[in-house]
Amino acid sequence: KARTTASSFEVPNVTLDDIGGYGDVRKELLRALALLNEPERIPKKFRSELLPKGFIFYGPPGTGKTLFAKAVATAMNATILVVSGPEVTDMYVGESERKVREIFAEARRNAPSIIVFDEIDSIASRRSGREDGGSRAGNAIVAQLLTEMDGFRPEVQVLIIGTTNRLDIIDEALLRPSRFRAVAIGLPDRDARREIAAVHARHFQVTVRDAVLDRMALVTRDMNGDEIRSIFRDARVDQLLTSPDGDVGPDRLGTVVGRLRQGRHQRDLNR
Ligand code: ATP
Image 1 (cartoon, rainbow, N blue to C red):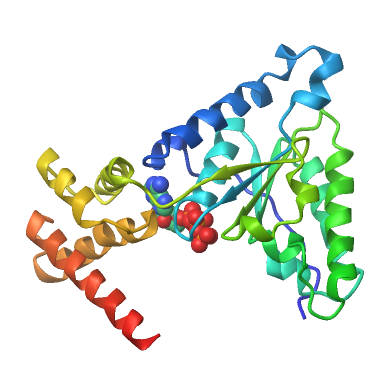
Image 2: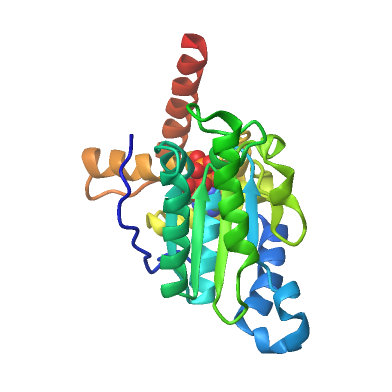
């Protein structure tokens, strides 16, 4: 069982420019940011109702949910704490609630701030989470979370972001419009894959012609952002090991894609 440990909020190092694709998600977050960053645009009497309090980013693994949370924090000039859901639920009865209370208190002290609950389904699933206490114990954590959120004061900026692969099992109480807004972050489409490839080509300083990016967008069909990143990363490693003075060319990228696909195939066979 995990012990309660001190939580430290950090200054994020991701910006929206580090994220490829997902124009609609970006647009929605920019709208929220316009309010969060300039609450004085909202008449006082509406402020607590109109300011966003939380988002749930849902979709398959490796698509940039945590990345988006960090980029929002940067755009808000906020500190951020990423908490793993299972870590909170895997505590003795009563301790989880205390932990949630502590995290929120710390968030208020570090405001503007964002709390990310990774795998929030483990905390807030309908059947709910905690194996020892069953649903009652699980609901006590949800209740604590909602109490904290409902008590937000607009002048202390704290935003909650949950991530999950399973929106379908999230407690509806959280999905009420006044609480969390659900934002889908699915697998990237072809244009998104092209943009993600461009982001990581830039990051790993791989020079790619437009035609190569087009090709990458095609051959990465059904891959997520994390896998696309790993192509550029692995190609860079290969190059450093085999021809330190050379460059990462299209051939090398192709080889890595082939290897990645082969690896996936093996995993599927072993399943
Ligand atoms: P999980 O559900 O497994 O936590 P996630 O959706 O939170 O996954 P992230 O941790 O945000 O995924 O992404 C993992 C890594 O993959 C990122 O650090 C980034 O390098 C890369 N990545 C994923 N999506 C994108 C994207 N849209 N643009 C650029 N890089 C991406």
